[in-house]
Image (tube, rainbow, N blue to C red):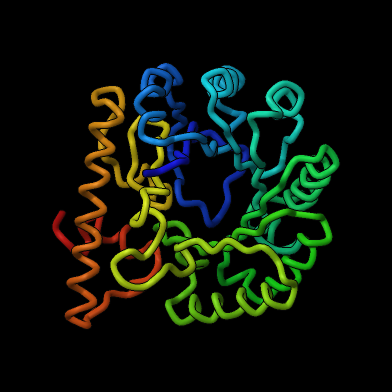
Length: 309
């Protein structure tokens, strides 16, 4: 059972990051009412928290109403931000602090690299936001997407994050889209990046979380999405998506406007069985596709590039 569902509530964003999974050409916002009518089934199936992302969450025109609805229905929530406008979230800290578990801020390099990937001034804004949150006593989690530009400065990134009193450090990897290929690590580079991350973690004794975009497990279980449906997400089109790390609109299971949550949840279970079966076939045959132990495997399978769904 999944306990957390990712809410990708909007495609709107005030940045145009070079490594972005989405690259949406149009602005879309998901419908709060569609989410709300599925709350009861979600609770019965073990959902206790929503992880809110985008785009940039505050750009959803009904963002305050969404937070109020989630909190009043007894759910916890966290959100992911680029840290450019932390004041837009101040109402949460003042009114909904007891429902907020943590805030995640993206740090994708030291100043020069981070600003190149995101936009000029982005690094200073993100660091200022971390300091604001830490000063309020709010747990801050960082996420760093390792790529060809920042891997050599990863130790410096971690050192800075520890100095800023970040509580947890998430390490991911750039997932390939047509727009970001120049940033994506090769399979060999990913292995070296994982080794480097583990070295840095040991050096600083830091609390790291590794995402499957960098390197997942082995065998048929592989990652949280295939173990316990940890990656379930709702995209801005109100569609339930198998995993938040599937590209574009994601590996869509179906629309919550047309189906109940439990109907689509059962399809997610079927998808897990399908992907585990495919992984077992490749392992036994010994002919592993590129980046077999990263999110690329599921992205390729679910896009029908390797297997027939």
